[in-house]
Length: 106
Ligand code: HEC
Image (cartoon, rainbow, N blue to C red; front, top):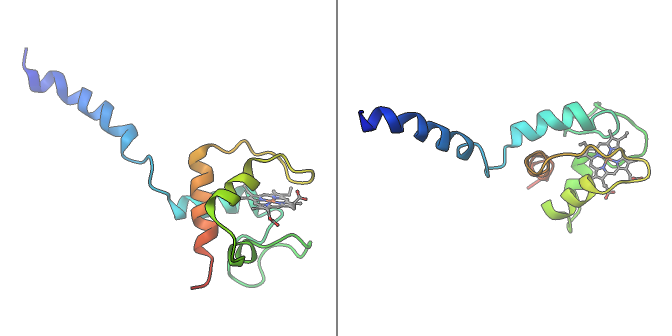
């Protein structure tokens, strides 16, 4: 039995879940925001998109000086009175928070 042939598939199995984990993915966060959040919030910086229903836009949320990823993730996981509970996974929350904070003007 050739050891390399035995271990190569194992190495792939181990490497696969490790590769995408951890790093926050703003593009993925944007896609999630457009899919799940845009019904109620203005989710991008371009003018003229989204609703004028009085809800905070994502650029406005990002612009608050005290805003950070932990607060955002808290807002996403809490069951709000008027905001549905999306049961977002940890990675979804990380990516969404990374995207929302990327809207902050520097
Ligand atoms: C069905 C409408 C709706 C959708 C969809 C929605 N939200 Fe909200 N969101 C609200 C409302 C309403 C509030 C105001 C707080 C409240 O009354 O619960 C809010 C508040 C927030 C806040 C807190 C803002 C603040 O003032 O501190 C954050 C952050 C937020 N939403 C993020 C998101 C994200 C991320 C998504 C997509 C995963 C999302 N929302 C999707 C309705 C919605």
